[in-house]
Every structure is written in structure tokens, then in C-alpha cells.
Image (cartoon, rainbow, N blue to C red):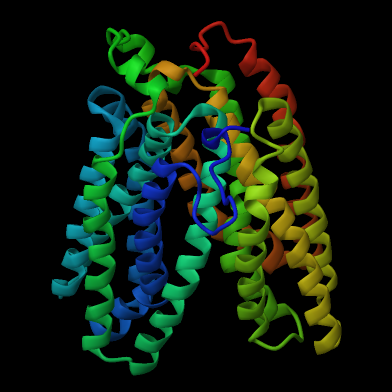
Length: 418
């Protein structure tokens, strides 16, 4: 492999590809800020601003709906004006909107700030996918994203540790300091993103005549691609299974101690950091990605079955059983992530990555947003039967990727390979 085809470590922690090294800096800063803020965001609005918790949750749901809708227009803007420039504007705007949290004194102010932050963050998800398409060689793009995901996991873990200090202090000054640091981790990296150099294939494409508007918007009518996006949306629910569903299950339905939730989260971060790049190397082409998604669905079903067994066990056996389930879950997570990245790129029209990644990113946002309600209704409310239903949903979605991807690859509108 050449240096550009092997972007990860070569005898050290830093990647070989200089562009990926530059990308890792804003990624690290932003992930640190997110890890710092996420544990205390809701508490700031309830304990410091004085808002009702139910109202805050409703406001976040409304903001999430706006965010899902923002992905496709943002992607179209990225195709028209360049993904790097649009991503920089979105991140810069998100930094300003995050800083506005510090002056919120009413529910109306909270709702306005939350909608802005969430819409800009969710819109940036697809646009950053297009940025990776612009600045990274196609052959190493998926492995590069795996490396960046490792950076995200490590940085969020460190940020979360500092956030715990602010939670312990529990003062307005501590919360405001965290919010402002998080705002800076959006605003400062925005400048770095804008200055990233175009990859050779993207520079050549940028010099070509713009594709007709009909083709630019085609992603929203591309049924094969939308089908793959929906299946990926179902699999993405596993993120909220780990972050929301599992802690609730541990506390409400098992004899495991409460600290088990934190233990499993740490285990997840460590294993993802160790496995993601290695797994991505085997899923960087469509056939491997399809196999990865199918395996991920089946492994998620197996994890659901193991989680269900933990109910009614003694504390020690409950912890051990939940740990086994969490390990299975991690393997599913890294497979689904790598497979999703590959299919999101390879099944898209390469002339309009912005709007295609906007569609794919909106699907991911929808899955994350719908996840808590789905998991609460199935596993938490109905126990073993709910886990069985959730597991079957994951398995069917993963296995259905194969015919959906075959359908998408037959689509005559596919752009030329990168």
C-alpha cells in the first residue's frame, strides 16, 4: 500500500497522510468539547436556568426534528459552494449558538438556541461526510474515517472526565465555563476545516462544469440509495441502545450495580478505539461493507438476547452477562459503522456527494433521535419480548442491506468512480 492508501499509524500514533493529520486536529478539539458538555447539558438548563425537565426534553425533540430536515439543504449547499466552506460556516455558527446558552433565561430563549445548535450540528454531519470525500483519497476514505472515530472516542472520554469535575462543582460558573470551552471547540476548528487541501480527484471534479440541478437533487428521489439509508437508520438505533437503553435496563430491570453502566461505556470506548481501524480495512469496498452490515445486524440481535438474559440474575452474574453483551455489541458497532461509511459513499452519485451525504446523515440523525422512544417501548417496557422484537429488527435490517445494495449498484445514474 502507498502512504495515501494507508492513512493510519505507521510506527506511531499519528497517521501517515498529512491531510488526515490536519483533519484529526479539529476532530479532536470538537470531540473533547462535546465530551465535556454532553454529561451536563440538560442539568444546566434544569438546575441553573431553572427550566422544567419535561419541557427541556420536548424542546430537544423539536430541535432534533428541525435538525433532521436541515441535512439535505446543507448537503445541496455543499455541492454548490464547496463542502469545506459550508462545513466551516456550520461549525462557526454552532460555536456562536452554543455560546448563546450562557445568556438563556427563558424557555423561548432555550428553544431558539437549542434549535440553532441542533440544526447546525446535524446538518454538519452530512456536510463533513462530503468534506471527507473532497479531501481524502477514495481508496483510504473509510479507513481514515475509522481513524477519526478512534480520535473522537478518546477525546470524548477525556472531555467527559473534565465534565465530571464541573458536575461535582455544580455552580453556574463551572457550567458556563464548560459551555464556552465547547463553543470554542466548534469555532476554532472551523478555520482549520476551510483550509484543508482538495484531493486530486476532487480538484479535477471542481474544475468541471456544474451538474444540472436535477441531478444535484437526485438523492432525494434515488429509491435504492434511500432504501440503504433507511436500513442504516435502523442499525444506527444501536447507539442510543448503548447510551440510553442499557443504563435504563441496568437500573430498572437488573440486579447489577448502577456503576455497571459507566463500566460498559468505558469498555465500549476502549474497544472501539482498538478495533475500528482494523475492521474498516475489511469493509472498504461494497462487497465487504455488505457483509459487515449483515454481520452487524446478527450480532446486534445476539447482543439483545444476552442483555435480556441479565434480568433476574445475581449482581455478579448480571454484570458478567451485561459485559458479554456489551462486547458483542461493540463488534456490531464497528462493523456497522465501517459498512455504513462505505455504502454511503460508494452507492452515491460521485458528482453530488454533498446532497447524498446530507441524505445519509439525515437518516443517521433520524435513527439517533427515534432510538430512545423505540428502545423504551420495546426492551424497557416489555422485557424479553421487547428485546426479541428489537433484535429481530436489527437482524432483518442488516440482512436486507445485501439486496438493497445490489439494487443500488444496478442504478444507471451512478457517477464515475473516484
